[in-house]
Length: 243
Image (spheres, rainbow, N blue to C red):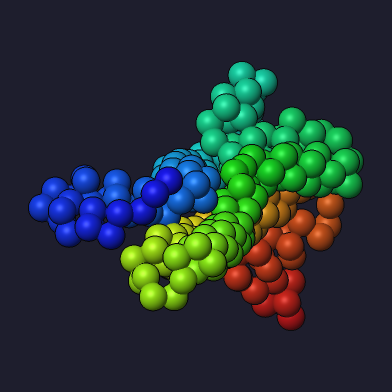
């Protein structure tokens, strides 16, 4: 791919032609860099839509489940609907489906469902992290190939012909800049989405513990249920208050 120094000035009147000339001057390494940029944007937009708070941990869902538990109006149909409702619903449904079993077994079912939900929430984040890591390396590869072209031009035309060296230098600089332009936003998006996933997982864990305590209190089979419920809700233990 031959670089034409006059192509930039000729294409500045048309932004699309100007961008094409930049990509063309960047050499073959620009193709995987463009692919990385498209994938990074697609993953970031998809995860931003999927990880919306109202979709993952709906605020009204926990109150609805609590009313079911307190009124003892749970049915298998409600549990199935809850499981299909949201990621938080899947975790809570796992606990409700095992509410008549031992507490340890119920907690294991909740933890197992939580692991599956967390895995689904983290989908594609590994690919986004990989893009953020390899984009600067691809830019560095373009820098190396550009310098190789530059030294090859020097051996053919000598150092007295700057235009012969311009193609390799342009390739080195453009690919380096492109790699950084892709990697920096991709890394920021990954960190932000990773923090959002961690926040959702924390909320689901907290709500699951509240559900277990509520089931214990409703069944009145475990003496520690009231104290645990008070601790989770931030209220003092009724026995300590009396004392």
